Length: 602
Image (cartoon, rainbow, N blue to C red):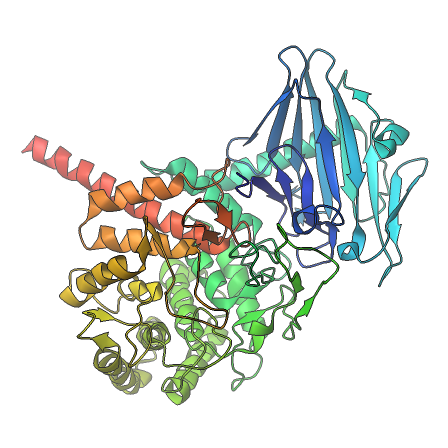
């Protein structure tokens, strides 16, 4: 079964997906949201790829070099063995800043014998909208297209360029390389320089993971998820992407295909909160600056999402010449959801601002701007919290009074009051407390269903929704409150299917949902843990981890029956929720061990 068996490599400027057989099937250069160079994942015939082919006597294994984002694919027939180390260069410059060129390196390490392989090098620039032609030049292979727009890439290699382009057999007797660059190199690379790039990049990632605390349980999964979230952060602006891909479908053959190479305020803020807890405050500081830069006017409403370079218009269009992942059309670029109103983003953003100030108060610059944003958010919430919106799941038709949106409006006030206390601005607090109380009472009056014994998806509805599980983690309700316990149990009864959760089961703009939204299952496991069903939560968590791909990576969705991964990949949402669950289990384990040691002393 195809289970999105890809590894991601990247350098916080762009990213690429490489299959478990070593085929580079998705990459956009020079940046995450640029047009694709390889897009086989979206069309096996037209998309373009960069493959390494060996005969059937070889077995192929793939793993990450420990605590790094360097992907190692090992080819061996027992006697003849080699490894391909795939990465995008990233390391700290001595003069300051990071070296992050729009390049992919494929370093071939000779292990034993005389291994043989062939290469399929087939770039299809600008989303394969027209022909891409490749030419052998003295120092490189140049590939270019004039379709729609002119674009080029350059392939440098230690191997015979003619054999590479013709797909002829190559015998590996010593280390070699490919370097795919968006720009022509000023200094021609060689194997020694490429190995130095590999070592410098390895050191960067080892230093990065060294800052992450060590956890008693699930430490490897926490680190891999943290590295994946880092790969989805964009250095230049501070944006955090929802995923590295576009148009991987929520269900095979259906039209729920979206472009996720953008920065959703909600997703990014949740990521930042988790990454901060793991000790990486620079990512958080860059993101806060991204937000500050987006709100120049005090009365300007926040969009739910932006381009990674702060673009506000994200016009959606379809690429009808591409057949889509496993035939799932349409392939989309851009995302029309940018124009939606989703009132929850204000609470989510205030939660991040408060968390950063609480953790790093003495360190945070731009405190005046953050106080201005805080006042602006309270003003917006005060004026708009009673209005319906599209909600967290971005319903494209009617607006409703979504419970999650109301809860997050409450969070906005709760955190704004805490921020006011940090800044000593107490003159605002009484007025804000009055509004916070009104919102809280409104939720209890309108979102609770006596019939369902649960908080529901929206006011006056009987539909349940996994997003309301977050009311406890945001501090709206205590975990042991009977209304929350009953809500968890009602959601399990109605939305759980073989241990995986629906977001909701009511019809949306595209009919009935037919796959599980991965983050919702993590939310549910977390809620089970919080209400005291810890053993059950742990068993479900371990089961869910087994559905990740061969590298422990998760996409947006999981098919209920087959358990195959679906949706855009890798998904920041899924990995941040994995980390939250794993940290909770690990903390509990530490508390238990601490209590046992005290008991033993007594």
